[in-house]
Every structure is written in structure tokens, then in C-alpha cells.
Length: 375
Ligand SMILES: O=P(O)(O)OC[C@H]1O[C@H](O[C@H]2O[C@H](CO)[C@@H](O)[C@H](O)[C@H]2O)[C@H](O)[C@@H](O)[C@@H]1O
Image 1 (tube, rainbow, N blue to C red):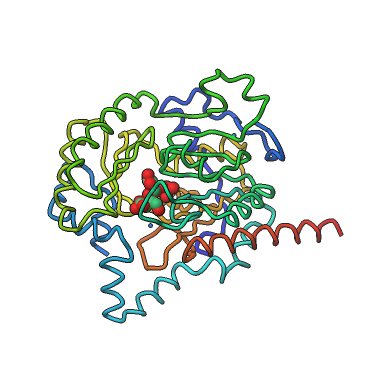
Image 2: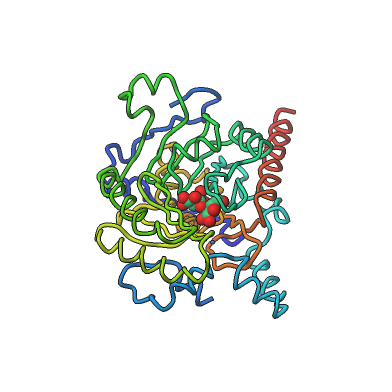
């Protein structure tokens, strides 16, 4: 494991929260130990594609970048054709399987509290054409439920929080929707009683002022892309996704140009790219990495050496969280990918089925460790 040692974590989450106006920086929002029931909380082309910032001069590279966003598309096909297994082997040596190296992962947690962070699409559910049909299997749900019984567990997704909850359906988890811009803790009668009815259990929404703007850009994007067959615009509350998975490749240039033109009308919004999707979001300095730190702080682990955050994700937006773990020198970043990708994660898993296996092994390992301690 690249970063097995623990460094003193800074209170970056609290500071970041303060930066965007968190009402309660440095405060423990989520009581710990975690609730049993009811307590209130992804070479060159790829690099160029990390951020399609407006005015970045990447016009010519947009379609290349859109191709690169589908690992099963150009890069993988080219790699297979050239028979470059070596590249894959070298990548696996740098990012070994979290299952193959399971003992190393759990050894890093010795004497520490594991906190689980799980991305949704491509991590807990397989990637499908229709974003509204990205269902999670019942067996995966049971695995996540078991993990949450042992460790505080959060879902960190680009999706709107309500939508990801509809898919996951587990009230005992922490949810960070809209790429971390909408954070909520587990359902708790006590906390709900204290919250205004419209705001039950909501802990942090650093981009609330952008809501009207997101509505506007959503409408403009729907209007502007309606003539492009297969384009789908998804309102994720504090951000908007424009999907091109079902758009004919010949129309990708036109779609990219359209999205770019619309987003230019909104200087306080920025454009980036995920897996066959454009992401439009506020320019605030908030991402999945900041959400991870916010959640750790809120759980009472701000200055704690005895915590091991484990973050599993498949997308470019998950890289922000992997970078935070590297910077802190604390935790385990696991990228879900069958293909070599530039990543700051230390380990890899190939697909959601392996994520499930990993989660179940973790539960079993923890159960056995606790039993051994009792004997
Ligand atoms: O952070 P995540 O939970 O991974 O969300 C990122 C985006 O995921 C969804 O889109 C992706 O999955 C779809 C369903 O498999 C697929 O059709 C699409 O091509 C992928 O990009 C979601 O629909 C987006 O809103 C999220 O931003």
C-alpha cells in the first residue's frame, strides 16, 4: 500500500466548510459510535479530458475527450488490437486488486475505525444506457447494509441526493448527493424533530444560492439539446448532467459545442466530464474530496489518527476524494475499473461484483476480529 502511514490530519474539511459558509465548522454533527438505529448524519488524451473548463482551448480535443470517457470505447479497443497486456500488467502493479491485497488493506486498519465511502454509478450499480434504470441489485443492497452495521458508511454521488436514495433505499447511511454539495445524515426521529420540515436532517448544502441558476441552465440545456437524438439532460439539483452515451458519435461535436455555448451564458458555472456525460456545476470549491473531509469531521474524526477512510469509486469526480486521501496520508482509495486509467487511488477492483465481494469480506473480517477479541 502506497500510503500506509498515518499523518496528523489537518482540519481541512472544517476550514473548507467555513470557506463556503458552513454554519457549524469544526462541530461534530454526527455522533459516534455510528447509529445502530436512528441517530442524527477514474495518457495524454485522458489528462486533457480531466476538466473541460470553459475557455480552456480544448475545442479540437472535445470529441477525443468524449471518446476517452468510455473505457470500453477507443482506448480499450486500441489497447486490445495492439495486444498491450503489458500496459495493463504495469498498471495493476501500481494499483493492485483490493481483493488480492485484502490482507494489506485490513492490516492498515489495525487499531483504527474504518469509515466507508461509496460512489454509486459504476461502483454499486453497473453502468447502463438509461440513467433512470441504474438499479442496484438486492444482493448489493444487502452487502452495503451489512457494511453499515459495522462501519459508518456514506454514499457519495454526482446524482441528486433524493434520486440516489431512491436507488439505495437504506436510511441508515450518510448521503452526499450532487458531487458532495448536498449532505445528509441517517434518519433520526430526534434530529428530524429539531429540523424545519423542509430541511429534515440536512447538514450541508454549500451551493444553495445556485438553485435558481441550476434550474435555468437545466431548462436552457434541455431546449438547446432537444434536436440531438439520444442526448439526455438530468437535473441533479445542485448540478446538471448532459448524457451522450446514446448519442450517435457523428453528433458528439455538435453536442459538445451546444453545451459549451449554453454554459458560457452562466459564468458562475463550470463544465467538466464524467463517463459519457458532461457535468455542469457551480464554480465553488467543493467536490467529493471536500465532502469526504466534511463527513469525517462531522463524525468526530477531524484530528483523529485512529481512523481509516476507505473510498471506492469509478469516475473522474472520485479522483478528488482519492487525492484527499493521498494528501492526508491516511486511508485507502480504490478505483473501480477494468482498464488502466490515470488515478490517485492506491488499489483497484474491476467491477461492481468485485466491490460487493470486497464489502462482504470486510464484514466477515470484522466479525471474526471482534469474535477473536471477545475470546
Ligand atoms: O458519482 P456517481 O454516483 O458515479 O454519478 C455520476 C453520474 O452517474 C450517472 O451517470 C453514469 O451512469 C449512468 C447509468 O449507468 C450512465 O448511463 C452514464 O453514461 C454515466 O455517466 C448519473 O446519471 C449522472 O447524473 C451522474 O452525475
